[in-house]
Length: 111
Image 1 (cartoon, rainbow, N blue to C red):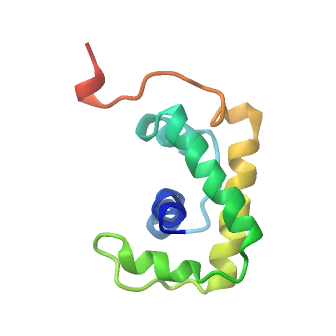
Image 2 (image 1 turned 90 degrees about the vertical axis):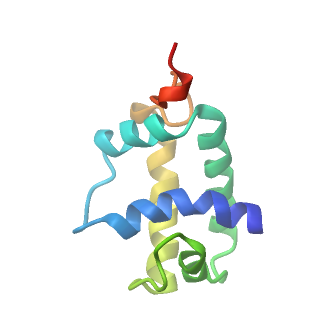
Image 3 (image 1 turned 90 degrees about the horizontal axis):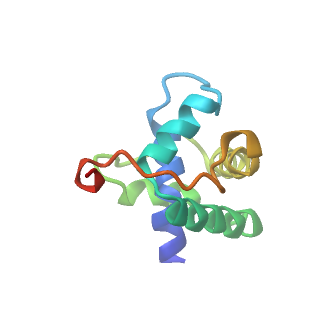
């Protein structure tokens, strides 16, 4: 479970930083690919599949372990629905989140 929590922090960070009801779109997909290589994105996706099967899990507690966040304004049902929406976003072939194996933009990985 702890591993799933750690992997869910990335999609939840996007939720936390939203200023308004932001669409999960190509821009977010590109940013996500810039940050996470394909192997990690697939691990995040597996954690989202785990989350889907564990709706009663207290996802709001994950925020307590995130840097600089003490409490979230979202209730558990909202967070669960967001995670399921994010899972569908990752499954959308248009964005290539589960197939695009391009290099990340991390400076230490550049030649």
